[in-house]
Image 1 (cartoon, rainbow, N blue to C red):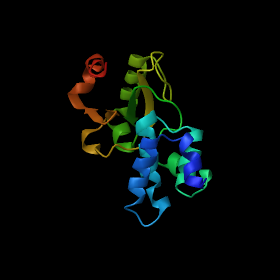
Image 2 (cartoon, rainbow, N blue to C red):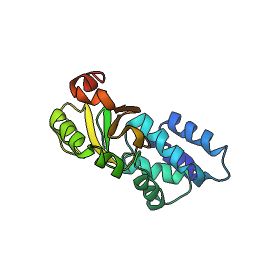
Image 3 (tube, rainbow, N blue to C red):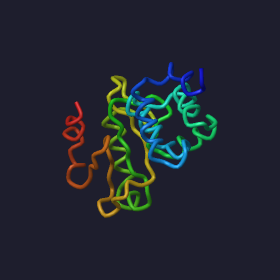
Image 4 (cartoon, one colour):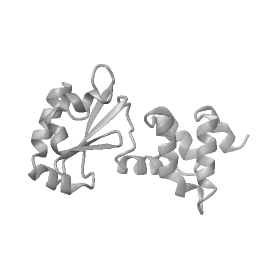
Length: 163
């Protein structure tokens, strides 16, 4: 058995095919690292140690090298997360415009601290350095939706949209 076939037991055939499709468009296997991590995360919700090792072998790179990419890229989750990920911006712009108060209100509303997941596994709360929308500060992102401005006045309504 070759190395790529041996690891299939830890990556689904769909994950392996999707990663191979990305590799086909790039100059080498390692260039698909971020895309491969995103594929695994999309299928599983996060990237476990075992799936990281299997992905690294598929990409012909060491697990340590792939983990350094995964931990640098803050949208790759190396621990289980809730169904919805809430990221509160803590950049300088958001901080100056009330980001600390927003973070406190979200923590209180969800009943968790940064880095925690609600008991029902519905939300995980994480800080993020910048969401790239400083003109709308302070803000947060739930999954892929930015939330800012008047919407923040009614957190109950905001979080009910993600039932």
